[in-house]
Image (cartoon, rainbow, N blue to C red; front, side, top):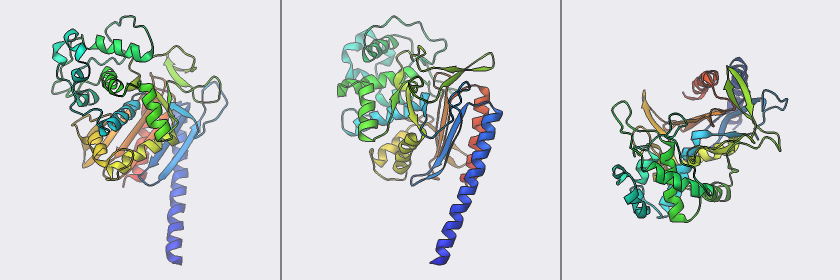
Length: 361
C-alpha cells in the first residue's frame, strides 16, 4: 500500500513539474510571437492533465490573464452548432438525410435547382456546394431587414439562388459558413426556436456551460480584447466595435471560457470512448468520423496511424483558437489566444507540437 501511494505521488510530482516547464515554454512562445494572451489545456475523458493562462487582456492594459477569461472561438462554433443540431436529430425532429426543401418546400421554386437534393448532412459536412461566405470575394448582399433570425432566413433564400461551387479532386468539400446558416434554418424551423434560443437551451440550461454570443464583453468588465493586425502592429478591438458575421453566426460567433470549453470537449471524448452522455456514443462517432475529410463540425484526419478531429477559429481575425482531439489516445489539446496573424499561428503551432511531445506518447 505504501509503495502504491509513493508511486502515485511520484507520478503526480512528475506531472506538476512537467506542467510548470510547459507553462514556462508557453509563456516564452507568447512573448516571442507577441501574443497578448495565451491559454491552453491538455485533457482526456477523465481529467484535465494540464491547464494554464498567461499574458494580458490587451496590449494596452495591465490586467493579467486568468482562467476565467472568455475567448471568441470563431469557427470552432461549428462543432457546437453541429452538436446542438445532433441533439434534435436524436429527438426525431430531423434526420441527417432530411432534404432542405423537405423543411422549406415553399422555397423550392425560387431557388437554384442544383440544390434540390441537398441534405442536413451535406450542409454540415460542406458537401452541398454552397458559396463559402468567408469574408473575401463574397457576392454583394441585399439589405436584409428584421431580427437576426429573420435576416438569416432572407440570407438563406438569397444564398440558394446563387450558382453552386463544385468540388474537385483537390477540393473534395467546399468549406462554407453559409452552409451552416442553412442547416441552422432547418433546426430553427422544426423547433420553432432561434439559433440563439437553442444555444441557450442546450449549452447553458441543459449543460450548465456559460456560452455567450459574439465577442467577450470587455467594456463593462475586465476580459479579453481581440487584436487585429494593421501594418504589422496589433490593435486592440473593443467589444463595442461594429461587428457582424453577415448572417453566418451559427458558423462562428460564440465566446466561452477555456474551462467551460473543456467540459464540451470532454463530452465528445467520452462519447468517442463509447459512453452515452448528452448525446449517444453512436452520434459522437458519426459527428467526428461519419463523413470523409470533413465530418460534422470537425476536420476528420487520418495520418501516420493517427485519427484526429481538428478545428480552428479566427474570431473575425482577432482571436485564434485551435483544438486537436486524438481519438485513439483519448486526449485533446486546446489553445486559445486573443490575436490572429502569421506570428500567432506560428507560436500556436510550436506550442501544439510541444504539448503533443509531452502527452502524445
